[in-house]
Length: 327
Ligand SMILES: Cc1cc2nc3c(=O)[nH]c(=O)nc-3n(C[C@H](O)[C@H](O)[C@H](O)COP(=O)(O)O)c2cc1C
Image (cartoon, rainbow, N blue to C red; front, side):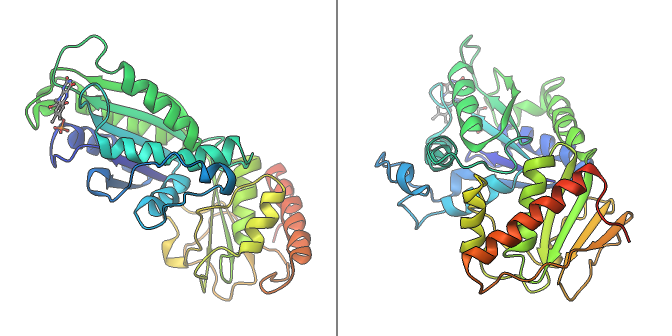
């Protein structure tokens, strides 16, 4: 499980920072891997409104940090958007990221491609402002709701704290940090009860990527799926992306991961599936280990990729039903 905190304030150790840190501590306490990204210091150019993404599914602007952000957004199980209120809205740099998520919106609503994690990803808003304004969080809440929808996350509500002006004022609030920690625990805790499954292949570019995505797509409420390879390729195989897109499943922005990047989460995997990797799982599985004898589609034509894709989908569905082959 990967929990992404988007830190919207440029003020280190300020109110937003403290609130987000408390949320992430709560999530970490439930075994999740957490990451805080200082969006205020990211180089993210504003959306040009050119509609390129509506045709191509990705942004024409490729030389800033948005590619990295798309990878992280797609990887996240929970996204916490933490922001101060600047003129009744989030600061410009956070808004630039939100506007640029239009490419993810276009993939979802125009190209009709399903992000495999969208059925279970959660989004939560943390906000602080200096005044008492009744409508202080109204606009930001709407922005957050539409942002979460675009990135394929279910909006789970918000915590907003008024009259927080001086840096660190939030630490003196009677419940704010405890409330944020509890929310982090709650949102992660719900997901941490899922069974853990790991798919391994050689390059983590085709077979194990497809298997992970299918398990997330068909059974993501029951299973927390991950994948890795013992010789990770530089990118997911474009033919695997194409073959999955034919089934409406989006592998865009995913990256091959090595064995050393497998999330530990402090508990063993319930299921490990090996597909031709030479090294076995470095973490001890508590449940079953399966070998799926599936030929490596790397370097083979799209037709062959489709055959492997379909075979993997069938096996994943059996795995969800719980009657896959045992060893
Ligand atoms: C440029 C700017 C605009 C602001 N606009 C508002 C505002 O419209 N309403 C409000 O209540 N506070 C406003 N504030 C105050 C901040 O929201 C407040 O100090 C907050 O606690 C800052 O959070 P931080 O410590 O995480 O940076 C503004 C602050 C700045 C720097």
